[in-house]
Amino acid sequence: MPAPERYDVAVIGGGPGGAAVARRLAESGARVIVCEKGERGRDKVCGDGLTPRAIAALDELGVELDASHRIDGLRMIANRTVRELPWPGGRYPARGAVWPRKALDQALIEHAEAAGAEVRFGTEALPELDGGRVVGVRASDDGGGQLIEADLTVLATGAPGPAARLVGAVRDPNEPFGLAIRTYVESPRHTDRHIEACLTLRDEHGTPVPGYGWMFPCGDGTVNIGVGALSTMQGFTKLNLNSLLEAYRGLVADSWEIGENLERPRAWRLPMSAQRRHGPGWVAIGDAAGLVNPMNGEGIDYALESGIVAADLFLSDPVTAPVRYDAEVGARFDAFLRTGRRFSFLIGHPWILRSGLRVAVGTQAIADITLAVMANLVEPDARDAAGRTMRAADALLALTDPLLRRTRAAA
Image 1 (cartoon, one colour):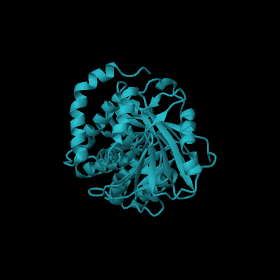
Image 2: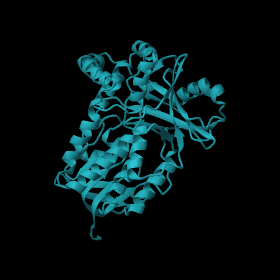
Image 3: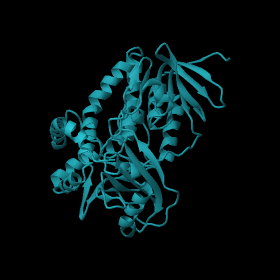
Image 4: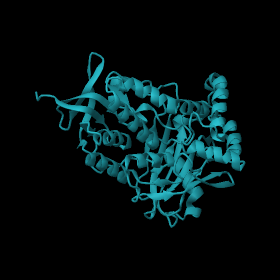
């Protein structure tokens, strides 16, 4: 049996969150290893959109955006109402981007390597437990099991899987989750500076779908086209994502002049909760910690931010990092995400969904608030209209949440 290897931090997963925490640690001199089960250059199914919040995190990490396609705002569509909304600026840059995940992830992991992190591709890893404490990972690329000891293990594994189950970082079965599907198409509008979101989706039976369809122009001749839906909708277990995507395709085919699908549509699950996101010797970041906006399915910005937080807290005090990480992430995100989960039960009722969508884009002022919510731009202490609205919504939904859950639309 080979002797254990020793690192300061072991990271499971080489996506945006894993690469962010590895780069942040390595550039400060920590010895970091990233175990990524995919091969170098692997593609991760995603919507590819980067919010201004994600741009801010990439700026903090020193990642250049030249290879991405700049986005200046969001075009929201609800029935016949269309509103083009520029990013508001202020605390976050007044720009977003579309950067296909294959290229984004490659750029981020190269930044981590350049900073000094060791990255092993094609390597499965699971947390190694000793008396209830995670002491590193057991890594394998050939069916063996090399022990890698570390003071901190970071789960950057995306949707919960075997690694998460070992430490209890699994989805709360009482909370909603999402499903999404996307492909790429050619379009003459591939350089459009707005991403587009259609909030009025219906399945093949005419049932309103709590979710949205998107057109994210990549600037390379292609557009990422996809749809997403929440588990709170009526008939969710019977929802056919391919049919929903085709129905949405019919809505945008003429306006975007799109061609045939360039690849088979691919679906993925969006976790929106986690029963645990830290414990002795470990933390979970990004999707693995349930940090996904229930109102748009977006999580790249949360993955980057939570990775930076985990790294900085480890560098300041490795012993207390997991507990402080949970508190810091909770202070930043929990209220907003809790409100989003409660709201998803509300719009699971078709008649509420129909009425709510008319309100969401009914006036410019309310549409601006909708933009802030969908772009993850609402801060817990914000004094602007979006912040006040979210706090009021959280208080109201707290009172109605038990009723909403009891009367949720039948799956």
